[in-house]
Amino acid sequence: FEDDFDHWVGSSASQGIMMASAKWSQDGPIFAEVSDVCGFNNETRAYTFSDDGVSMSSTPGALAFTGFLYRYADTADLNVVHGGRIEFYLKMGPVIYNDDAPESTCKPSFGGDVTLAFSTDQGSTWNVFNSYTPYQYRGYSFTFVEEIIPMEAWTNETRFRWRQPQFDPAREYWAIDDVLVYASFDPQWQDSQDYSIEKERRDESIRSKQCCAGTEQCPRSQSVDSCDIEGRGRTNLHTAEAFILVALATANIKQFFVFIFKRIEGRSQETQHTRKVLPDMSKLSKPFPKQTFYVVEQSWWVLVNAVLLVSPLVAAVAFNVYSFFAHGGGVQSVVMFCISLLFDSGYVARLLSKSFRFSFCLASKLFVTVDTTPDSGFLSYGREKVPLGNLMDMHLLSSCYVWFLYVFTVVSGLPFATACYMATRISLGLDFHRIYVRLLGACLVARALFGGNFLAKLLLASQWIFSLSRDQRDEMGRSIKRRGTALITFYVAVAVVFLASVQIVINENKVHPSHARLILYGSIGFGILLGALAAMLRGLPVNAHIFFTRYPTMGYAVVYAKRAKCPCMFTCSSCSDVHSSQRMFMAYLDDKELAFVRLLRGDGGSSEDQRDTERLRAEI
Image (cartoon, rainbow, N blue to C red; front, top):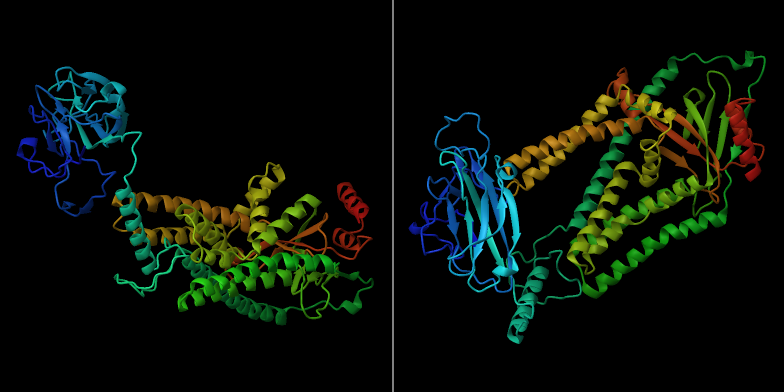
């Protein structure tokens, strides 16, 4: 049994119902009419609204009960000998504070309960098995109701009745919509051999068409010799391929912005340096210490990590190459595979060269220089040169925490693009395929947006977000009060709203206007919250430069401020704060006497700092 009350010729059953499944009783009248006096349900059917109302093939409505003498409706006798369930949407009149409202409004309900009953003797006797009170179901929208048919009603001649026994004739209107009665099959039901053969034939036809059209539901082990359906040869972009292209575009846009920013910032700094008067260091009576420390590099450890990062990439490449030879592939498949391979190999190469200092050629050893000369003192490592005035803090990281950072860094270098592309070459269950592709695709885009060590940044950010320390909470408060917070929040909120708007436009026919507005409002709130969080983390040391050139142990990490000039207006302090951030540097130095720590702290340091130094010296 099914009736949506949108396919009635008139307002009464006697005038005709176009749905063959709407089997209402023919023994007597139905004391209700199809009308929109109480509205209609719009949850199960997405009506398309136009400026002048509802635009569809038939006028929507619901079965409204507004009579003065009787209010009920009976179905015909239905076969539910093996049980089943009933589904419908129920609405009772909302509270209206004006009793002189027009007749077309849904009059309020206060005490007229609605009952659902069944009869197994052609309507002679009725057995109520549930009732619905106004305070639960009155309002401005329909409420979904689902009832299991009781065992006493399991017959081949069972009819159901919706009835309001007692009511105020001038009030207490109610309506039902989208009524469904499901009948269960025999528990001993078995498909016939003819049905099984026909089902297999149709499944094979569906699989063939899926492969002809190049959909993601096509089993990769199935080959199709000939296709005669429309769309053969059309270039279809799979979800995995879309993620790869989005990540590629994100990475290129980010690199272009960094390139332009560094060029403009470099010119600005050159201009400032030409105007700055440097002190005459020859007139200083006492020289200030300047020392160079080499980074400890364990060759076996670097080689182990190289194998650990390259092996998954080689395995993914080997599988894809084998899949090409076994099942074939077009030009689009080859191009997407090459893009994903270059994407992953680039990140693996950068991670090996920067974090693990791995190189096939003879490269100079990494060293760290500390110069404590006033006005020009600095700390430098690699291409980074940090003025001593920008140094903010120094932390002793435990071995366990360093191991976590190491594991997250290695996982960030896994071949997400190539593994995501593998989903187009293997047969997976539809549900598992969606989870697999979306999870790897999200990691791929996040790596392109936040950098090669995005998981390590996530670990450092979670340490601050979930911190209970008062000092760290104060630091978070100072970070969010930076002048660039408003700009970052605005940019992120605009980006989130833009993406939500794109999704609404793409799914225009599937999203109701009220839901679209709710999505937009939600995206604004989520974008502001996400932007504030991003601005706060921008002012915290979550961007780590850690060199894992030896077996991870405890060590000191230096926190410093990376100050930048705005690429558009050199005098705009808020814009400069947007591009400035805190960074954390850590490396294992060839410094058994811990001169590096003493240089940065001074001769002494607090008692707690001295205890940390002794702990580190003991471990060394």
